[in-house]
Amino acid sequence: KESWQNERDVFLTPGMRHENILRFLGAERRGQQRGTHLEAELWLITEFHEKGSLSDFLKGNAVSWTELCLITESMARGLAYLHEDVPRLKGHGHKPAIAHRDFKSKNIILRSDLTAVIADFGLAIGFEAGEPPGETHGQVGTRRYMAPEVLEGAINFHRDAFLRIDMYALGLVLWEVLTRCHAADGPV
Image 1 (cartoon, rainbow, N blue to C red):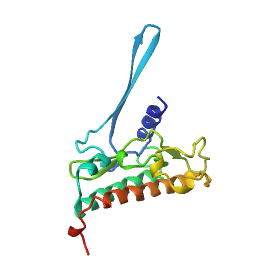
Image 2 (cartoon, helix red, strand yellow):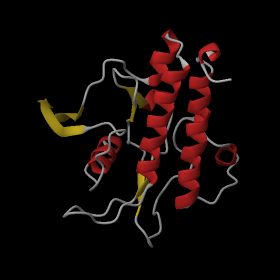
Image 3 (cartoon, rainbow, N blue to C red):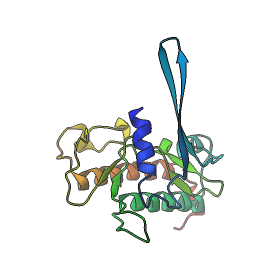
Image 4 (spheres, helix red, strand yellow):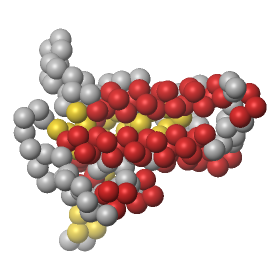
């Protein structure tokens, strides 16, 4: 429930519409009474992309240099926008910098044209200018994509640290894509 609520809140943050962030369509909470217990179903409704996650795509496909550039550039643009602090624009509220905190190839969805959108904001955290980050639980996400300083507990968790941790994870995802690239068709 907490992850669902957090993801919904991130999607509803003013200014969260970007071509490289998964488009949010709505959220629903449905409940069923089972005896004395209420079972809730929590739904997030987003756009659908048949290519699925980057992780799954790379398991069955090698990519050309052109495809590598499409995927990685769109992924980086999405993360840059997520990290950007966008001032109040045209009646919309302010969009704070947001750290994803679980950036990995399973949370990148590919469109049919192989451009990427970032998904799964269940662990994301927003940083309002001039305010402390609050309860952040530093070591969250997928261990394989965590920066070494996070794993060692040798980091002071603050806004810029969280954004850099996402960038480290982006580097690992770039490496994953690069290892599935046909080098022969790229520039020398």
